[in-house]
Structures are given as structure tokens and as C-alpha cells.
Length: 263
Length: 273
Image (cartoon, rainbow over all chains, first blue to last red; front, side, top):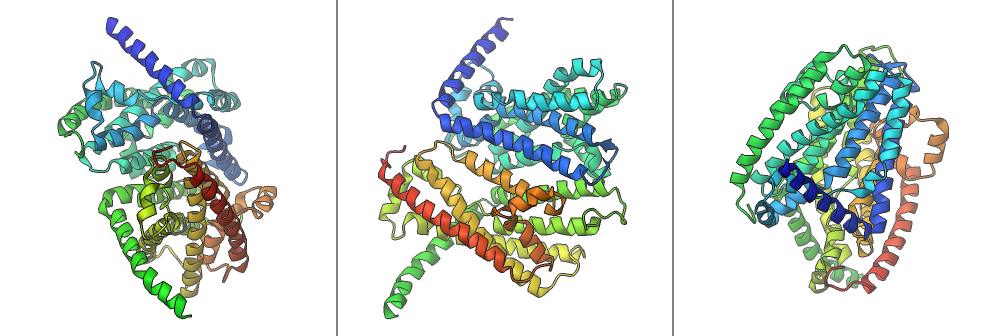
């Protein structure tokens, strides 16, 4: 209990410092808001334009796919707010040896590395991201149970995405220049932004079992659309535990590999 | 005339050396280059291929706004080639150079800031041209580019190189805004989101509402992806209108770049901003 309190107090400081840093660069703050909004609108409009010409894509009609896209935008919103920046900082920290000072701190290194930077500007887009989700959720329409479990499933989806991305980012410890790994991470995100049924069997299996990125959105949305689809959600929970365990193991190996500056 | 030849004789070796250095920088970390430049184009195509296959649901008879499935896939193959060829990333470190005070070193270089980065752009574009040619050869071997003609390839490549020049000038502008702005990557991301959406890189413009297409024709966006694809597909020959419209925007951007550089360099302190 005292350990949780300690971590929460540290996280509070992370939030405070992130706010003061970002508020001192107001133009960047405003541009980040626009960047997220452009992304949300262009993603939804793309799907909308396609549905102007077809009635269904795979088994889903327009509102179902729009709900899926909105769900993934909310996951992306959480990711942008809480995690995103830390990955970009990590490649620099490994290259320059700044990581030495972080590893010395009396808190878990995954916590200090990946939860250190928060983007308050992205936080301001909460209304837009959740607005789309609620709008398309009501169009589907979702059942009361589905509405109640929606926030939990959203957090679970975010946790699974974070675990997979942290595992991928450990590759930076083995490379001289880790920037490319961040681009790989972004490509993984773009694959996950579409429902599993659009992919062919082999790709679907690969991205559901070996690297379960398709479970991030497809499992919770399919479950909310049909509460009998327990297999999807069971798979997602299993993936969180298995890949969470793997993440800690791989992270320990990565830290052993770390040789300070220019490693 | 003699003066021009003398200037060229003096300039060419330093340009050649700078291009060679930039080429080495790009190819030094090959995995990184692949993940940063080629990987995103391949994944983007992979997602679109799967999406459109799902939209057409295996129906070879289905035609959406003039495109059957094969034509839609061909469109997106060319979209990938245009993305590789025309949308370079060579201006990435401009803002960092400015913020960290590194542009001071350009003052003692035999080339100025603009020339140095333009040489880097030429190296990048040469590399991308090789990669694009290789991509076209591999895809053609699988028979996925029907009706490919040499004249379409010639017109397509020359127009795409012109587009890449426009893209470089635009990226240069976002880079030198680093004199004022802490994080210029946000501008680049906004640009790439807008371009992907409005240029026809995700879906052909025929699928957009008519009012939006009419509006877009007054902007440079459709001339960056949609029309180059149409040139490669052999539907347009020498694209005079595209050259003129992008040329107009390039002149505007060059003037803006010059003004911003002049204003920015006045407040540059050499100790980082």
C-alpha cells in the first residue's frame, strides 16, 4: 500500500512538471491539439467516404465500423496523453547515456521511463475523442451492460497496446540508432486501427496470437457488440498477462545489454 | 559564360562531396533507414490492400466510381511508389540544428545552410529513385502493374521528382520555423496527416464528395499524390497544369522561406534558442 502511495506521489510530480513545461510553449500546445483533431476527423471522414459507395465492409455496416474507429481513437488518445512522448525520449536517453541517471532512481525503471512525460495538450481533446465514441456507440446501439464495461475495456486495450509497444521499444537497446524502432511502433499502431476481419487468415493469426495487436480493438468492440463473444475478451486478458510477463523478462535482458552512452 | 563555367567548376566538387556525405549518412544505419522511410510505405500499402480487398469482398464485378478491385490495388501500388519518390524527409534535422545552435558551423562551411540541405535532399532523392525502380520491377514481376508503358514511367518519374522538390521546399519552411517554435515535428505531422487525407493517398479522389474535390483542385494537395498516380497509370501524359500549379506554390514558398530565414537569423543567438 505504501509502495502504491509512493508511486502515486511520484506520478503527481510527473504530471505537474509536464504541465509546467508544456504550458511554457503555448504555440506547440495549441498545435498539438489541432494535430490530434485533424487526425480524428481525417480518420473518421475516410471511412465515411468509403461507406458513401458501399453498404458494408466485411460483416459490419457503417455505424459499427465508425464505433470501432472511435474506440481506437480513444485508445490512441490515452496513448498520446500518457505514453507517446516517452518512447521518443527513450531512444535519445539510450544513445546519450542519460538513462544512467534514471536507472539509479529508487522506482521501477519502466515506470520512470515510460510514464515520465505526459501531454496535457492531448488531454484537452478528451471531449472530442469521447464525443465520437459516445455518438457512434449510441448509433450502434450498445446495450447498458456494454456502456458500463466500455471504460474498463478501453483501459485494458490501452494496457495491451502499452505492453506490446514497450516490448518493441526494448529493441532500441540492441541498436546503435533506435529512432527507427519508434517508426516500427507507429506502423504497429496503424495495423491495429482496423478490425481483424479486413486481414487475410495468415496475417490475422500472426497479429492475434504472435503479436496480439488486433486484439487491442477487435476483442473489446466485438464483445461490446455481442456480449456472448467471451472468447475474444478471454484472449485479450490472456494476452495482457502473457505479454505483461514477457515484457518484464525482456526488459530485464535489455537493461543487462545496456552499456551506457553509445551502447 | 566563362564566369558561369568557372563558378560551376568551383561549385560542383563541393556539391558532389556533400551529396556523397549525405548518402553515407542515410545508408550508415540501414535498418533505421528501412524502418523510417521504406517500412511505413510498405505497411501503409499492406493496410490499404487488406482494407480494399475487404471492401470489394472478392467480387470481381463490383465497380466503385470506375474502379474494380484490380484497378483499386493498382492505384494503391502507384500511391506507394509516389509516396516513396515524392515525399522525402531530408529536412528533418533543420529545426534541431537551429535550436541547438548548430547552424553556426555552417558559417565556416564552403556552402550555406540552404545549399547544404539541398545537397542532402538530392542524395535522399537519388536513393529513393533507386528504391522506387526496384519496387516497380519487383511488383511488375508479379504482374500487378498491367498496362505499364515507358512513356508513363518517364512522365511519372519526372513529375514525382518535381513534386519531391515542392515537398522539400515545404519541409524546409517547417524546419526554419524552428527559429520561433520549440517543436516543429508537430507541423510536419499535421502536414503529413492533411496530405495523406486530402491528396488521394488513402482513397481515390473520385470517392470524395464533389464539393470537396472542386475545393481541393485549388490547393496543391491533389497534385502531390492523386495526379502523379494518374500519370503512372497512363491516364495523363505530360501534366502541364500540375507543373504550373505546383510551380506557383513553390515560388510562394521560396519567397516565404527567404523572408523567414532573414527574420529568424537576426534573432539567432548561436547558443541555442
